[in-house]
Length: 367
Image 1 (cartoon, rainbow, N blue to C red):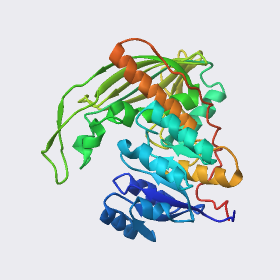
Image 2: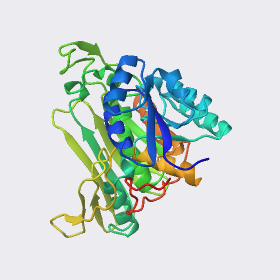
Image 3: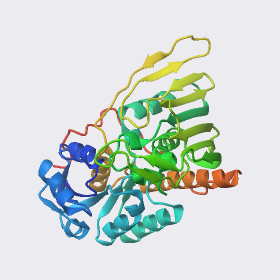
Image 4: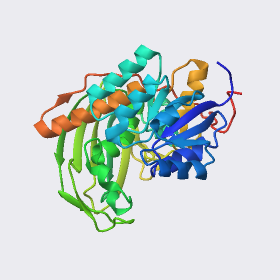
């Protein structure tokens, strides 16, 4: 295989594609070769905006021989079908979260990739940023002793306030658990290790929502998922966590704290790549700032890490196995919320390898 930038094709030209294209078009180790969308005109508009040479439908970009990774930015209901098609075409695939709608689809994707000798990667890649990686280094250095418990919460009024096409957020595969949960649960697993069981309660605050912005403002649509979920999570290495995910809160809140035998660590928002990292020891009345070191490039870091790992024949960090464990964890939360009983999480995954503070997305390493 020749060296040089690794070719990437993007499927899905919606709102999130801007963030990926902004970053992937500046990373010297990858080159975006094509964009596809079910709305071909939207794909062409994005291709023109970011100087991407090819735009069209899914088959168009899958036929690009130089494209080695397909970045799947479609809505959750299409994640499995698009990823499976990309694998059949001989492409590695990196997808937006969740990996699939349920654990069976996720297992099928990983098995298909394994049979074909291909890789699966999945968002979120925010845990690769300076904020969460600095938290991991602080934990490893014993900043709070042995971790005992965690508290996380992400609560707001819902994405229909700002998103022009928010209906998919309230369909299976989304809701606050599947939309926001991957950021928090992936970070918990990256910092504390795999989960073993969960107990949860879930509610749906309103059965109908109203679009608040864009050309469809004022349009009502149905809600088909729980919009307030609270979970208790046990981890294999001993800690536990309580986590709340809500689209029913008039007061926006973000919380991520890990308490250990020697103090508490306030972790940056897992939906960002940087943020403040603070610690408080027993008896202290104020938080102390800890250094935050490393890249804060934004969405697409997981794609870049995967590209470099492909060329180096090493592991990538935002892996399919990690995403599958988080998917099974979210599915277990859903099951527990319906049955009001503890639900086991069968799969396990290794903690992702630490991201060196010197890791530089702007450095060309594949030339």
